[in-house]
Image 1 (tube, helix red, strand yellow):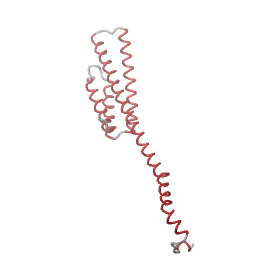
Image 2 (cartoon, one colour; image 1 turned 180 degrees about the vertical axis):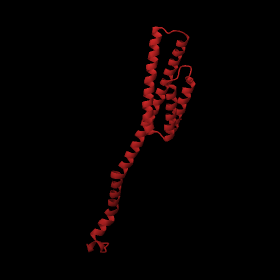
Image 3 (cartoon, one colour; image 1 turned 90 degrees about the vertical axis):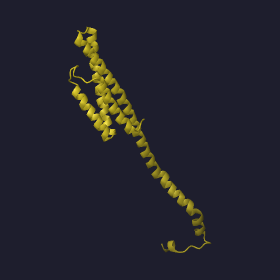
Image 4 (cartoon, rainbow, N blue to C red; image 1 turned 45 degrees about the vertical axis):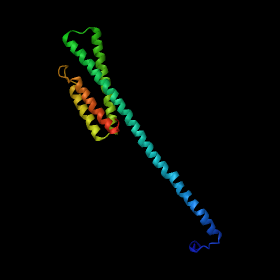
Length: 172
């Protein structure tokens, strides 16, 4: 083992090999470390972040779409309920009213499901906004047509929730 610490003559073959092959070998070893270990880790981390961002955008779009459909279902249901207060509905109108109730419930269930997923991916601020809307919406579920908030109040909530998610995604 002492031979490792002996001085190497400039005319020896070992000196020439180390001098001419040493830097390229060191470069290959360091480059190999980077290429085979560090770069794949950075790439995987980047890919996970990108996939998460894409997933959040898709979820944001679904929430925006179903929120709009939920409000439209409420609008139809309120309209036919007000008509029912003025006069007796025909059998066809009663069927439409039942259909509107089912649609509203379906859109609400879909929206609640999407909100549950959003609470896993979005910030605490977004979660609070979602939870506040859900409490507000739950309180309105048992009100009579005269006690219900206006459609513009639902639209205000839609804007608040969607805007909060949009800001987090940095979408203009």
